[in-house]
Length: 581
Image 1: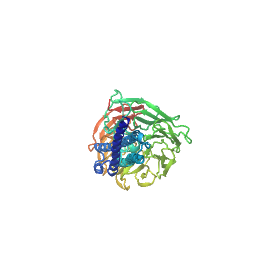
Image 2: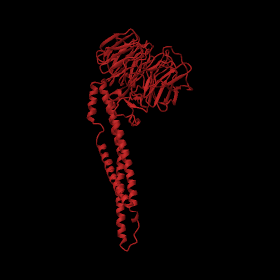
Image 3: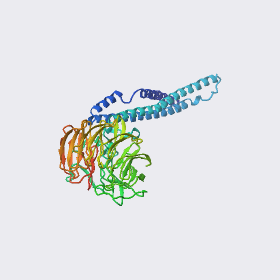
Image 4: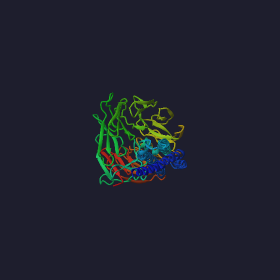
């Protein structure tokens, strides 16, 4: 009876070994010979995006393609792991069953026959069976191991191709940083966290004016009206612990901003869905730190922080730079030199890869600095030949799939290689002390400042395309699409220009002052004046005013966006607007 059971178990396990080995070997050849995503689909999306780069529906399709590739990777990887584990278990079961079945046949029987031949035949049979099963199982496990890098490389290639299609999808995380919970196939914009009622959007707002600091955000279902007095669409509102003119940033379920006074400079982290303070980190005991004189409308915490989902960095007018992990643990801190600036240092930070980019245009030094995010050590520095300080912030523009670091100063708009600081091109067109950051869309860089001009530059070769000196911004940065450039002035005019020719399309008088920069979300332009009045314009050809309303609180910072939510910092506090209320 015992031998019969062990024999049947051995037969069943042998069938499983053969089946799973064949499956794993076949899967290897399928993965190694085919692409995860059909190349013709990607090529069509590339072509369509080039023709209509500001189409949110198209960008959503690209995001869906990206997330499906990620989900396919993790699904196939799970199957490989499970298949290999089952195969290994079946081999163990098979060997044990055979040992039980042949237990009585291991020794030469004490019979008056030709025992040697009979014993040798049975011994060879056992060995052949074990060797065949073992080799087949090992082949299956080996091919499973070989399939994993093929699968990862092809999926990463597909993801890279979809991310290249549109610059605004740079908020997606690398494949290695994802897990199965974040790769949700049915919701391309949000992934559920451990609670039953809260969703964390994958759309990030990682720096001043969003990812790459270009003023474009991919958030969905954004509210177009709210009321601070009645609480309509207001998820939460809290007082800011310290003064600062910097804008909030969003990553996951966390909101970051900074504040400072003469005694303390701090980086803050709040929970997006509740407004609860999660942690704060003070910049202290940093050699070389000193509090300089600043004006009331700039202060010590004007630059916006930057984040990449792993590290968050802040800089203050003291020249202190601090970097922390997502839980508020300080990773490093250093002083890059106290800025000599009669208003106060205001250029915001930007993260590119593993580098922290700092535009440092002051009276005592004019340079752009790249620091290693992990250590804070200097990766490279580039001296700049500008005449005056600047308060503008750097952006990253992807030109022919390659990144360019764009800075505005006086008099130059300059393009650098963000990897090593090599200068690509330079156009001299600015004057004064520029505050607005550049804009970028469809291969063209746009720079503008009051008392100077607006210039359009071919980002591929640095050639000047056109200039226009109507309605120049003083503080607010321009934003651009493939067809239009939008500016908001300090004297209340909001204007739209043809991106290809520079022709003025339309201007509107609002009779207010703008410091906050416009952000384009879902084909709409969100803009807040210094008195707190919100304007929502169409980013299409008609450039119509869709809505406007008062909030009652002075606002100088630029809002941050993620799916269904806007985070806005005012002089009195910080609040979150939600379309889910």
